[in-house]
Length: 314
Image (tube, rainbow, N blue to C red; front, side, top):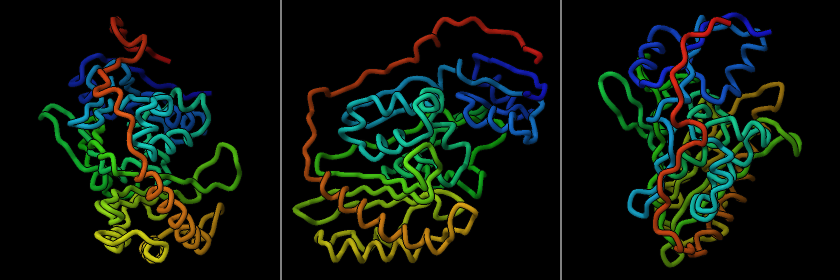
């Protein structure tokens, strides 16, 4: 059974931020929060349901600015959006690996970030695309690179009276390619033993703006800057990819757990990086189909015209 708690369902961002600052736990899809409550972990005295906040809703793409995703965007909506698969392939792959289909319908990008798990499937790809977080509170909005948003294990550059509202991904040129691979113990719903994401642009076979992101390789999702320096400005080749994979392995700091040893994860870093870099390079040679210049903002069905509800005592 769930423990007793107060449930608030605000429609005003400032009210939600106030409740969070007073100790209420934000909840959207609830795929982590309610599992923890059922599991007997320490329960908050109150939850604040943030699904009705318009600042966290809607998704938009333009050729000029790229992706503007509300924090409430579900993994399933990303998985089913053809433009994502075409241009932001690594993000499509990451979101399609989150839990089960049922969980992907409920779970949100914002929740995947704010849960703080180093294995988060959607976070590595977002790092590889150079994503930024937009947090908002009583003092206004702040834009923070996703890479620096994590300040430690389950710790963020987000004040008690702020909420993560949006995730911004820059546009990608036609000569860009990306890939993501999640290594698990079984071909079923499971956390990643290791995840590697890669992004690169190819200019006449020369690598530009490479980004490599690692999950379950440190206490937080991280970039492999050493490997990126190996690749930048170099002609793509098998030998270069192997050299970059060695840098990834050297830079990663995975830990041992009951699920896997650190030594095995280190080897995975190398081998998975080789595969992912090859795939990203291959995809960089595929031009986009630019049939749609702009995807207009879309709102979640059922989230408009809802009446505020009072506090519910469970």
